[in-house]
Length: 98
Image (cartoon, helix red, strand yellow):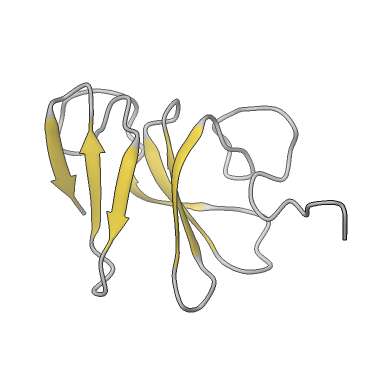
């Protein structure tokens, strides 16, 4: 097909609701086709399951900041085999694990 299909972020505008993404910067897809999406502007990681029109915040998501429940301007993410999420927390000069 010459056209793509939206699989996460079901609206065409950025935002912070669970159906929206705001500057996604990293993506991981596991063996079950579940997506983990790091959002730069929302300072969170959301999980999107196949067929689910809404994401679920699973890391950070408490606004941007320096607290251990927050990230700020993050660009990189890694999910290991035990589903630990490692985030390169750029503005805070650290790597955090959830």
